[in-house]
Image 1 (tube, rainbow, N blue to C red):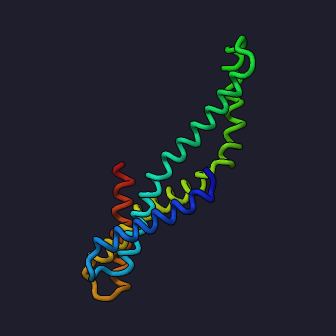
Image 2 (image 1 turned 90 degrees about the vertical axis):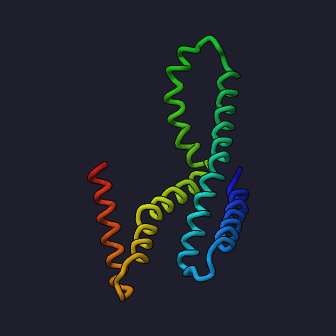
Image 3 (image 1 turned 180 degrees about the vertical axis):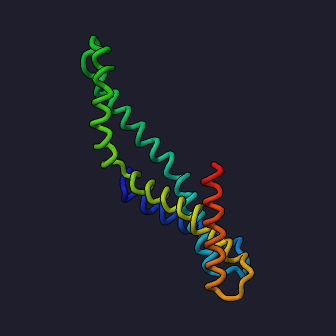
Length: 156
């Protein structure tokens, strides 16, 4: 599976997420809430879609490595076990560079992390704020969110 195959899947997930959010959103929902919802649903779907792709890629690598190991001598099983850790570590960097799902996983992970811990809580607290001006609402939402994050960090 290469990047050329992942791109159409990503576009399909984005289109399905957009349809899903627009179909179930109320008419008076602000556009930035709709966009945040589309991004959130799309990234959640991307993580679910990337998992079997990544697992099949890892399985194909382990099958190829097993075929290479079994093609040689079977008498030195202890020597192969001792050398296998170093062998796997050297190939791990090459496999990571060749893995077509590595960059999509990083993008999905970090974007979802920022959405869950910063953007969505600040947006929620900003919308729930009772202040009159937009700047006061944003400031209030930011301070409440940061206080909640700090409280969770201290309490564990």
